[in-house]
Length: 280
Image 1 (cartoon, rainbow, N blue to C red):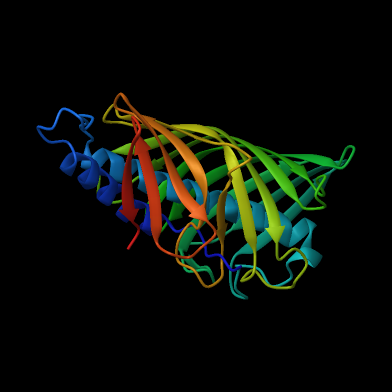
Image 2: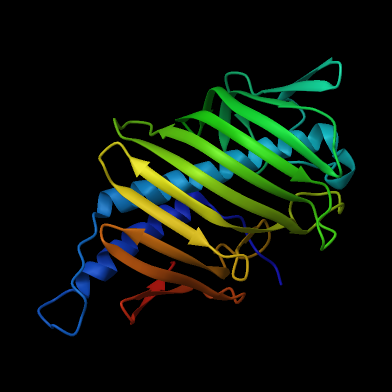
C-alpha cells in the first residue's frame, strides 16, 4: 500500500470543510448537536499543524543526512542547498543546517534560515538531540522555538523511532495571528528505511499536543499508537489511516481516516453523530 506526505495545504482545506459541515448540520432539529466552530481559527490551527509537521521532518532529515546517511542517501535536500557545518567539542556535536536566503527542497517547500542541532553520543541505542530554529522561514511563514528529540536507532520493530517534545511558534505570512504548539509526538519510520530514496518513506505518528492561537483559540489533539496517523511520499494525496481525538470550543470528537484505502474520505464523530468529510 502506498501513502503520501501529510501536506499542510490539505489540512487547511479539510479544516474549512469540517467547520462548514458541522455548522450546516446544526439546525433547528434538537436531535442534532448544536455546535459553533470558528472557520478562520479552525483553518489556521490546521495550517499551523501542517507547518509544524513539515518543519520537524526537515529537522530529522538534517540529522539523518549527517549521522545516518546510509538509510536515506537521496534525501529531500538538493545539491546546491542547504550547507552543513559540523563542529565537535569533546563528545558534543553542533550541527548547523543553513538554508541561506532561499532553498527549494526536492519535496516542494521553500525554506530559509538555519536549524541548529546539538547532541552527544548514543547511550544504550538512544541519542538526545536539542534543536532550535534560527531566523527560519517555511514557505514565507516564520517558525521559532524548538524542542528535544530522543532518537532511537532501532525500536522493537527494527525501525528508527523518535520521541519529540516541542514548543514551537509560527507567525503566518500576511497575518498578525501567531500559533503556538506544545506537546509530545512519537514518529516511527515504518517503510523505506535504507531504500536509498525519500519517495517511498512512510511514517506513523502518535502523541498529544495543544495548539493555541493569539486570538485565544485553543485546540487539543490526541492520537493513540493503536491508530497512528499515516503519512508518506507515494501515490495517494491524503492521510489514509489513523484516528485523531479533537477538542476545541467545547466540542469533542474523533476523526477517523480509514483503513488505508486512498478514498479521500474521513469520518468525524461528535456526540454519537457521524459526519462524512470529503477531503477533496
